[in-house]
Length: 186
Image 1 (cartoon, rainbow, N blue to C red):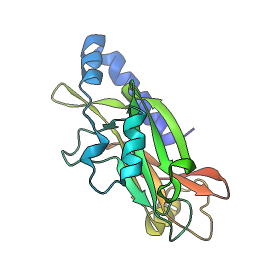
Image 2: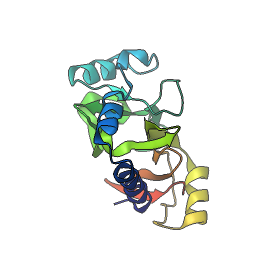
Image 3: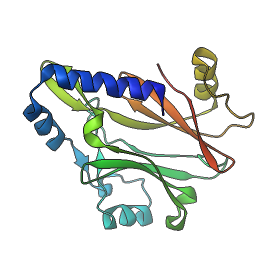
Image 4: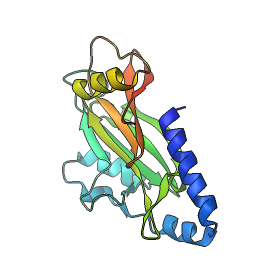
């Protein structure tokens, strides 16, 4: 689906097979730090409640100790504040998007096992690497010019950059009722 993320996942799988010790990867998976939605003070209370009612925890990458993987932006149209949360339930995560912060307008995209987002991070350590961030027009246009791929629409709003930390990313961009995959970092 995303050539960059597939490549990153393949590299992670190769790293897994090189290390060979399934046990260390099982342990790393069990140690993925997952935060309660309550930690995110800017997240609207209705969304926090929905996430908690659905058993969602927000997985954290190894790259920073600051809480992340909860973002807001104009993902559907300019001027509207939407929320996107990386929601992990029973070892599988999805990006949950709340259009205009409303529960009845929930969309889920990109389901994936959390284990698929583990990678060797040096020093014999393994870390979780799935990270989402809000990206705007400049990022979208610059990455299209640098890497090609699907041409962005003429009228832009924010997109959701999903990255395999320090490897590659792809931008999820909502346009005319469907999701486009635009070029991210390479």
